[in-house]
Image 1: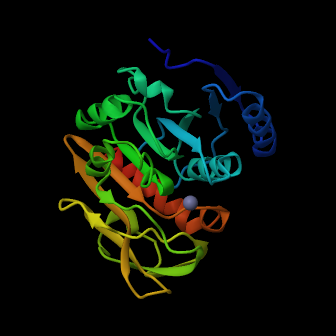
Image 2: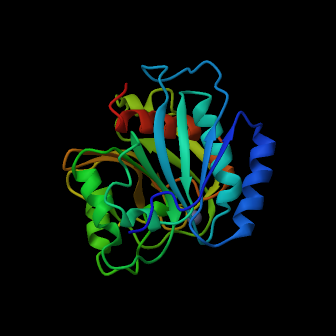
Image 3: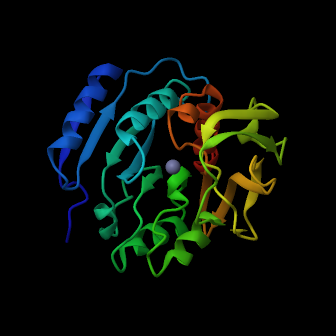
Length: 266
Ligand SMILES: [Zn+2]
């Protein structure tokens, strides 16, 4: 059986720059599964009901995105709003262990792997069904698109989407202004540039939060929603291709509030 921690490195109390340099170094070292554990010095959290840090396992890696830059920026800014201890998995291999999520409060999928080995997602979906919260970011919605059981993944995350508009600026509109997740989020937010994922189908019991109209053809697509899968709460957004969105404080707050909602915190 594959260990959930084939390689564990702990880094405590690092500066963002030191961490970024370290992370970049490690990602160039080896293609084998890699975990990096990080405890950031926390500033006074602004969001969340508890000062007890949530424990999050964040799956990342895959094609088409500069995760080595994106993940430190996003996670450090989440930590400025609410305390979260992140551990990072740079492959999906830990999913082969049925107990992969045992030590975490929430699982985050910010990755871009097109395929998966047979059975790989079974534990991820079972864990979610049993009530482990999940956060799906950007290409996590398009992940596993060539896997023969991709519909199982789509049914879990609450959306079917295969392609996106060309990278461009676009705006969003709220679909549930009363949602706690959208508190403080602008009524008419704009990204300086992102990939607008085209909605094929929002699974019927998903709850849409934000939509965006394509500047190219006027079609509207759901870009943020919540979903219940078994006992599991899912927060998802297709936003976040690169730094233009991820460095936006409104986006960082949206993801933080979504993560807290998934964990049952106001
Ligand atoms: Zn992308």
